[in-house]
Length: 270
Image (cartoon, rainbow, N blue to C red; front, side, top):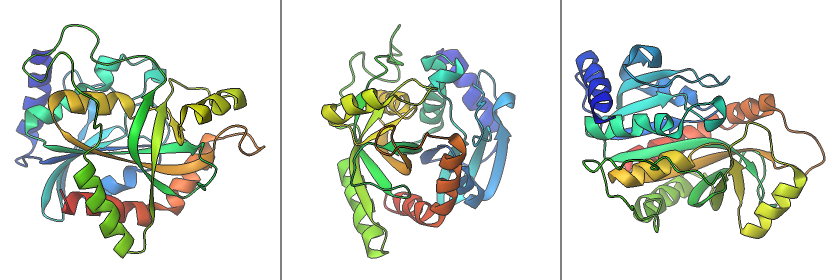
């Protein structure tokens, strides 16, 4: 795998002169943020050696390198999920490529269902902690010693100082950011009402099918991490109507101006 990481990183280096400082992973319906990258270089996932490919509607499947507000960034416009049949090590492969390229901070976004009954669709929630309910880990197997320790600490999965600054700056712009615990499930089926009741008792505020593997990998390689959820729906059983992926994309479209400003604040305050 180290050789594969090196070859993928080298391909990216050969296609851009930008040396990214911040990496971004954009979730369902949130890929529009990549369109704000200045002087962008677009690279299709399928062209990068050993890179996984995204198959989900709302995930375009391209990597964008350039600048935002004068900061060099690399953006995954479309992420990967275990429910697509992609191995976890492949899902987090881009994290190791980012580290090889010199990235120091990672901004993760996702679309999530709300378990916390005080949330509403359209809310932006900072993921302050995580529950791995998929019971899988991308670090299983031989450790990549050159990237990180065998047993990385998850005591502080997100960078509290960076997150606090983002929340305070956003509040000054009249953007309310809630904080909550994100629970990862494998998917692709949405959760049953009984499962949501269980997750509520476990202390989860949000549920989704991504993010946790990337957070684990980012902590393994020593990146600073912040993660934000766009609340797109109330979880099963909280409200009576069934869940549809189309609604996820509709809500992310509705809140895109606010969400974009939060991401800008994260870049500016790194």
